[in-house]
Every structure is written in structure tokens, then in C-alpha cells.
Amino acid sequence: MPQLVCQGANLACSFGTTPSSMVVLPARRVNAANMPAATIMDHIPMTNILPFGMCTTLSNPQVAAATSAAQGVLTPQPCIPVTSSPWTPGSSRVMIGNQPALHNSCQCMCMWGGVITVTSPGQFTVNVGA
Image (tube, rainbow, N blue to C red; front, side, top):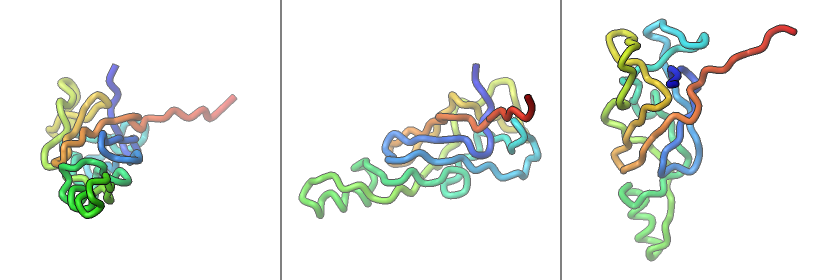
């Protein structure tokens, strides 16, 4: 069963070397597990989607140039996500501010070919008593 994605969700990129975190600005004032909930429009690089360590794809011009300079030895470069389109497919049932909510089965594409996925939706339960 899909879970809504919220602030602090863990993300992964197929060409990144480290996980990243989702940043959801509290503008919509809709929460999931007491954290701001995300929509498919929360795909803005360096605002919602933070870097994934180093980028390892030759379709990234920086990686291609560094690899060429290293005589063909793959030379990863710092990741700077380039996501120009929303997450897909989005929730068919839950709307937040007239946009489909983001759930943990959605994906976002980086311009360099990376597939960004949600590895943990950011909803954590806290046991506060015995």
C-alpha cells in the first residue's frame, strides 16, 4: 500500500553514490505523520531534491568531460540534480493544494538519465509510552 511522502523522506538516484533527503516546504500546511506532505510538484532541484553525492553517468557533461580527461576512466563528479518534470504518477485519490499527493511508489527523472525513487517515505512512528 503506497504511503504519502513527507519532509525528510529518503531518496535514491540510479546514478548517485549516496542517498538524499526530500525537502518539503511547509507552504501547503498539510501534514503526514506531523511532517509537511509532498506533491508531485515538489521536484525542484536543490530546493526539494538535494544532491546524491557523486554522479556516475556519462550523459552528465561534467562526468563525460572528467572521464575524457582521465583517458576513459570513469570519473564521477558532484551530483547536481536536474529535474525539469514532476514526479509520476502521483496519487489518484489524494490531492494537496489541487495537486496529486506524492507517494512512495512515484519516480522522478533527472535530465542526465537518473531515476529518482523514494526509499523511505519519511513517516516514522514514535513510541512515547510503555
